[in-house]
Length: 148
Image 1 (cartoon, rainbow, N blue to C red):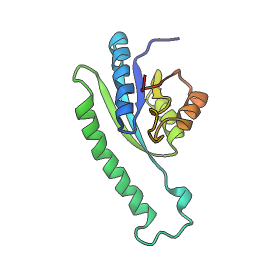
Image 2 (cartoon, rainbow, N blue to C red):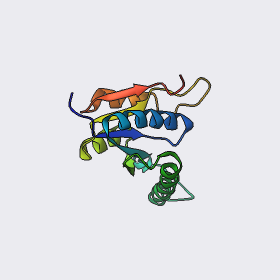
Image 3 (cartoon, helix red, strand yellow):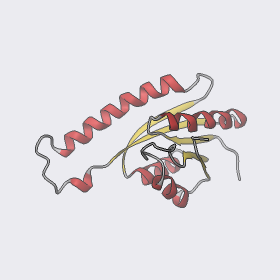
Image 4 (cartoon, rainbow, N blue to C red):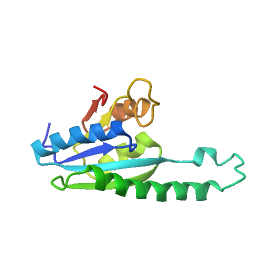
């Protein structure tokens, strides 16, 4: 394994993803690495054939992207300490594929992702997304259960 210079941390803005992010900080400090935080707005292309009476899907997707960008700015400002070099991105598409593509495009050396949510909580980013990232990423993936 080569040096870890950049760690990709997908987020869904939940408390659980903050726990994963905090663990990534520890690793980043040990290796002198930067953090790349990403959020993926799921593409609505699969729904293009359905009737949506109130809002065209294109407008809805643009609205979701704008809201996610604002949320990402807040998330980064509230959760990333100033001593950690970082960048962030809001992506659009299929979540696992976009995470993997972004890791490759930005030369990330490690993806850190949660494995599941805590008991009684809805699954959001975690679960099958994590499995697909682990199986298909071209760099090491460190998965963790943020609930323990």
